[in-house]
Length: 222
Image (cartoon, rainbow, N blue to C red):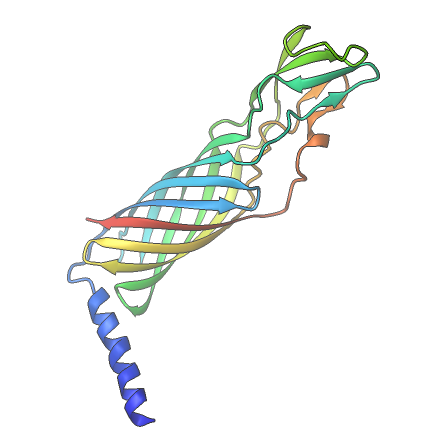
């Protein structure tokens, strides 16, 4: 039993030594890719600067794109139907900035990183094109009738995020595995669109209190 315990301690010590950083790098570039609870793909390049050994700042751009088919979101009336001209999946671009807190686990090379940040939606209001279909004429094809472009109003601009990950450093390179929870609503930029009294929001997935996202990534220290 003592032999196995010694082997375990030696293994942990060896792994810690392998991940140990010989230099105190202050800058890091990361690229993470994840899937969030709105069934949308998240891609985020970020830059961080550690002005203290375990405290720094972070900033980056988060691109989010819905990967499920939205079936045109039909808005119905008594004798008509408005549908999206294209199957426009929700897409957004956000700027994220805030603090970066780094907590060593096994050594300076294996750390838990916590980033409380603010998200700023750079496209708070989308403009979507809808076409009109006469429900009494089944041969009425898309674009054969009127079309209308409607812009959303009152979309949310600011959200909050708590992005956490475990980082394992190998020389200048970093492997990343993490989880992000935020107040971000991917459909905020189109929820307030209304056509002839029919709200697009009634056909969108319900707004949730929090969005969850699991992600992986790579980083580079310099």
